[in-house]
Image (cartoon, rainbow, N blue to C red; front, top):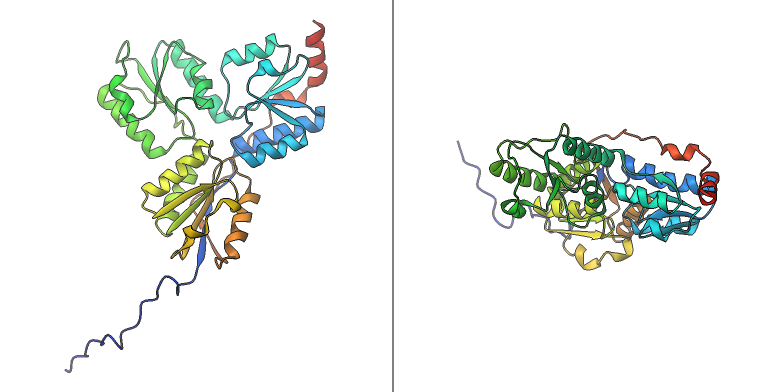
Length: 342
């Protein structure tokens, strides 16, 4: 038998260079609005339709610049504290939740309130109250200063300690190591949260876990999709605002998954064309507070630069919806007026 000679360098098939390979966008699914954000944004819109402007909102209803600016144009007024709202008005609490003291401030300020807290955040609040009533020490994994953490901590300030990552664990002290439970901010990185939990369990072997995972389904799904994109793309772009915890975590997850570059942008205009140099596959997703119109603008921007081929990378289906806040079924303008007359 005569051996087939190996191909010479001249006859070997050429490996296509990055510039020769077709350009494509890997579009994550699911992405964008989660059920809690959708509920909160619709709640503001419905309140404006039913009661007219102004409707005050304590803090940003969700952490997205475009959404806030759009609602402002419709008549929403965003304030830092309920105490800034004139008596006899309506104030809405954001999807991130508030402490009981904020509800009390609104009552003292003679304000009608709409609570747009995400039900999954409310679940964590209820867990905090339950474990505090049972006299547990509660270790809340989250980022200091985040609105959700402030709200949850306010439910049981004498029982809750914040743990902002594994590096904090060494300093944590509890009254009784057999009565300790961990809870978490809903928008964290799943992997980093479990790293903190593992460190806490090493220190407190009897550490109790919450009845169900506190990190919300949408956060987990978007991080799973980002990991999938990171394995196939040279660049990942996440659409989201700089103060959006879940969007920031998505960029971090992409980098940890090995993508060469990952960036967070609010708008297509913030993309640097230099990021595309040598890139044939761009992964694209968006945070849980981002309307899809902003993703479509990025797709158009990329198409104009040769990335017209869009492949959907689907890792989960999402069908969860939440009912609107019950306060929208009442005449809040009349209630607010009666509070001033009292």
